[in-house]
Image (tube, rainbow, N blue to C red):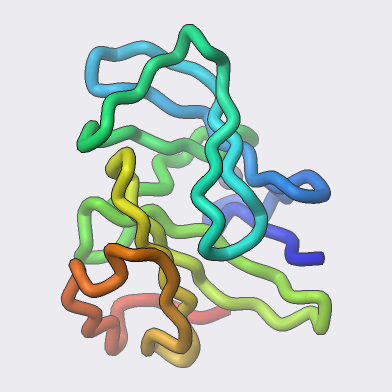
Length: 134
Ligand SMILES: [Zn+2]
């Protein structure tokens, strides 16, 4: 099973099948958002009163240290978390903080190794030297 860590505090932010964030909508409403731990699965679990519109930019924070996970790279729309594979390999994962924008990138040695989602072509992915691999 994939596990996920916060790139800032190294805390574990995933359960067995979900990644948990604290989030804030453009209108300033805050709530918990759970994304699938399966890369390329864009199911979202959240409180039904925490409404998010398609196209809305959502701030995503680490639930443990409250670091803003969006905008850590030059791509201000993309959030960054760390994937730990069952083989104990670690990769930065970038995904869009815009609701309904389905793109996810697995970064290896400063380059995109894998991409997921129907909007994966949206971002110009020159990540050379932009992400410090741990
Ligand atoms: Zn953290």
